[in-house]
Image (tube, rainbow, N blue to C red):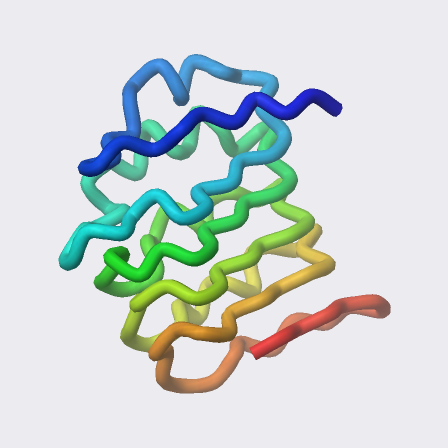
Length: 130
């Protein structure tokens, strides 16, 4: 596995070229959204769907400027095996259709301000950290 990390800019922008990476398996947005009041949902859900066939790991971690609700596109990434949404300032209810992520084996949601219950997911091996 190669490290293809890029340094974040002061005001991060998710560029359209990201969605051309059709074989992308892992994506981490780590410590990029540090300025107050930034939203991850500024990219349309359709673009995220372009990654849904291969994306297995999504980490949105340590972004103190990232606000808003858990983006709805996440529940369309049906091949996700690991979803880590850790130490951001995300709020709101967790979407019921998180249960659509049938391949999910790891779910970490701690360090946010989510409300409500984690939707029931029937799995033999499943790690949830809140």
